[in-house]
Image 1 (cartoon, one colour):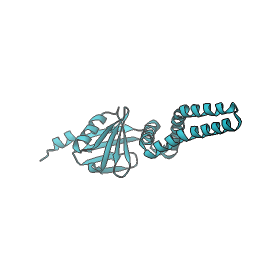
Image 2 (cartoon, rainbow, N blue to C red; image 1 turned 45 degrees about the vertical axis):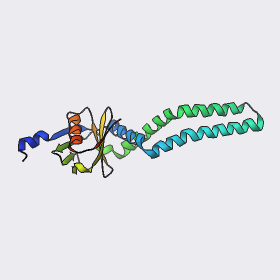
Image 3 (tube, one colour; image 1 turned 30 degrees about the vertical axis):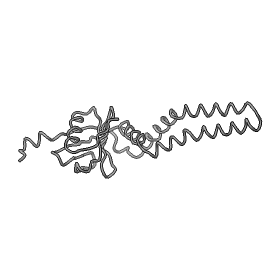
Image 4 (cartoon, rainbow, N blue to C red; image 1 turned 60 degrees about the horizontal axis):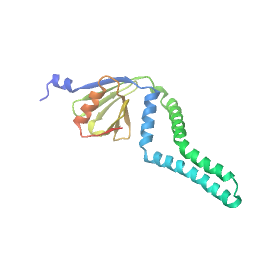
Length: 183
C-alpha cells in the first residue's frame, strides 16, 4: 500500500521554457542520427568531388591542359569544405523552419511531472497530456538537453539545466527499462 506521503516523494516535476535554440538543438540532434540524412550527406560529399575528378581526367586526357589541375583542386576543396557548409546550411534551414512553425510555442512555460511508476504528465500553454511510461521508447541525453522519445514518434525536449531535470530522467529510467543514450 502506498501512503500519500510516499506517492508525493516519488513525484518529480520540472518547469521550464523552450526557446528557438532548444528546438534547434533537438532538430540537429535528430538530423545527426537520421540514416537518411547521413546517407544524403555522404552521397553529396563524395559525388561532387568524383564529378570534378572525372571532369579533370577527361580534360587532361583530351587536351593535356593545366585546367585539369583546377578541377582536381576543386574536388579536394569541396571534400574538405562540405562539412562546414552543411553545418551552417542546415542550421539556417532548421532555424527558419522553427521560427515559422513553432513561433507560438517559443518562450512559453511548460511542465513535466513523473508520478509514481506509470504516468508522465506534460502541460504547456495550450494542452495537457497524460502519457503512460510504457509509451516511452528511449531517453537520449546530450550536454545541454534530455530528449524523451515516445512510441508515437514525438519527443519531449527537457533542458538539463532545469531544476529536477536529472532527477526526473533518472526516475524515469529507473521506473522502466529504457534505452538511455548518452551522446
